[in-house]
Length: 468
Ligand code: NAI
Image (tube, rainbow, N blue to C red):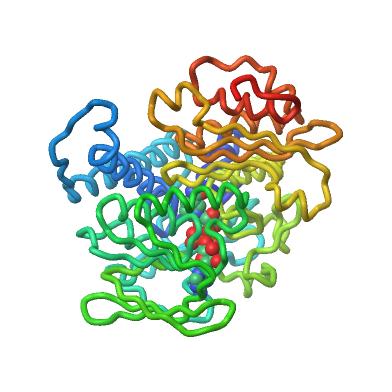
């Protein structure tokens, strides 16, 4: 039987695309090589890491945060096995949820490795090596990304001593020490998990800032707070080697600006130096699907590859490697295939780092506005001046809003603080509607909430805050 659409890959991009297409009346098949749906995000990425981030933060709070609130807990004990069981159960309920949604939308699942044979043809090879060919009017490649490793450095991952994010989600015991190579999102989130559980964590980062690309002021503040939590940072340090040694591993790095190399030992080394588009084994070269200079599938404005009827979305194409960006592209491409006007607004894609405090941002950073020569104004408000934050002893951080100097249109929002990942969305909605800081500052916010700091930051962008 010929399908209207075959989606290769069932991560957030692929599964959302499949469901949306089915909702629009298409007969859809999904090809997935893992034994469960959900891709990296649900199986070994966003979802399990959030389970561990929450659980480890509760442990940390029980040890360090509750006493000041008058809650005395005697010697909280870590049961790592149980914490991992909670993580596994969280993953299971999410991947089962995708299976349920596929059944509900009458989507056919094929387990095996998908290969594009050309326009309208996809082969699926299962674990036994048996191959079958499926036919469809349209194909969407949503194969995501893989661990990139350290550019130019040979790394032998064993996922026990030298681990990627996958191994770092499943360590059997808390290591005494951990070196994290890369001070990006994965390094800081998973470094936080193990630091809270008792590991001595050192982050080695090439750039002279953590979270390169995020608002500089926010990144500096986060580094200060993570340092207070016991994480060490070696910035401007290029890792040139990471090898197993005895029961642990050694990491060698040299100052980017030149100078002597240093070698550090640790029980576990986490390599978190980025991800690369996953295109291996897809048969793209043979099928004539063109890749760009960075190995990503090249697409036009409508997500179509160099072959008519073959589309690509998510981590395998240009843009930020974020689950929600892939989801929105999945919806948009399904709409385009259905003859509707699918669209993604790349100017308003929020980003969240789930450290404690969280970091969240949407739109332009101050650095980007400066580089583009845009005249802007800034409004900032600290959580130390927010009643709810004081009541919860969560006063670390601030909200920063950037607006066009002439028109007052909000161009970016940056939050570091407890629950930042939830608060960012009101700025995102405002930006989708082309709103101004005055619009945001004049919107009634419930009291007492952390979100009042967003309103106050907006008030200070266009005039003056009340509570400062
Ligand atoms: P990343 O690109 O965020 O950070 C990698 C870091 O490694 C960079 O700061 C880079 O300068 C550094 N680096 C590269 N080579 C190095 C070397 N030789 N020595 C020292 N440092 C070096 O990549 P990461 O953290 O691995 O994440 C991969 C992708 O997954 C990202 O696109 C990220 O957005 C996404 N992700 C998003 C999450 C979220 O939204 N909360 C959570 C986890 C991952």
